[in-house]
Image (tube, rainbow, N blue to C red; front, side, top):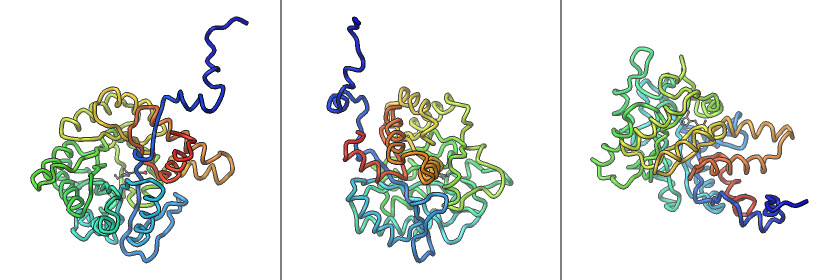
Length: 327
Ligand code: PBG
C-alpha cells in the first residue's frame, strides 16, 4: 500500500518516542501540599487521603528531608489549629502552627522553598474563608485579615504566599501589605481560577474546614464557567499576582489551556484532595494501576499548559520523572 505519511513511524521505538515528546517536565516544577496540626503528639493519617498525614512539626521535618532527597524542593503548608474562632486568629498569630512550622523548617532546611496557603477556613469556627457578616462573608472586611496572614507567614520564613480565599481585591491588599513591610521580592501565587468543587471533600476532612452552614458558592466559581476564570486571572495579574493557579486540575484541562493562552505569567494547576482520594481508592481495589494513572494525570496538566503542578503525589511524580517514565 502506498502511504507517504505514516504517523506510526515516529512511535516505532522508545528512543524515538522520547525524542519527539511534546511535553517536557522535571521535578523543579512540583509543589507538595502538606498539613501541619497543632496539639497532636504524633502524625496522624488522614482517613480520606491514605498515605497523607496531619503532621507534627517533627514529622514534617523528617518528611522534608525525605522530599528534598527525592528531588521535591517546594512545599505548600496548610495549618490545622488547636482552637478555631470567629475571626480565625490562629491564621495570623505570630506563634500560629504554620508560622512555627515555617521557622523550624527554614532553620533546618533553608533549601526547601516554602509557600504559605493564605486562607481563613481552616481557622474559623464557622469554616468559611473570611469574616462573617450575618450569614455572608464580608469581602472588604476580610481583606485586612488576609494581608495579616500573608505578612505573618512571610515574617516566619515563607518564600511565597498563595491566597486561596477567592475574595475580590485580595491580591492588591496582600501586595500592598508585603511591600509596605519591605517584602517587595516575595511573590504571590494566586488561586485565581478556583472553582466551588466537590473535589475538595477529603481536604475538608483533613483540615476540619467544611463550612458549618451554606457552601462556598458566593466566592468560589461556578464550574459551568470559563470566561469568568479568565476575568479572575486578568484581575489578579493587574493587582500584582506573579503566578496564576487553576484548581482543581484533572477535570479542568480546558481551563488550564485557556488561561495559558491568555496570560503571560506562569500557570499552576492543583491536583486536589478528591483527585488523590479517587486514585487511591481505585488503586486499592485493584481497578487501576496507580503509577501509570498518576503519571498520566500529571502529564495531562503540563500538556494542557501548566508550568507548575501541585500534587499530593509530588514525591512519586518526581520519581517517575527521574526514571524517565514521564518528562
Ligand atoms: C482553603 C483551601 C482549600 C483547598 C486548598 N485551599 C479548601 C477549600 O477551598 O474548601 C483544597 C485543596 C484540596 O482539596 O486538596 N480555602
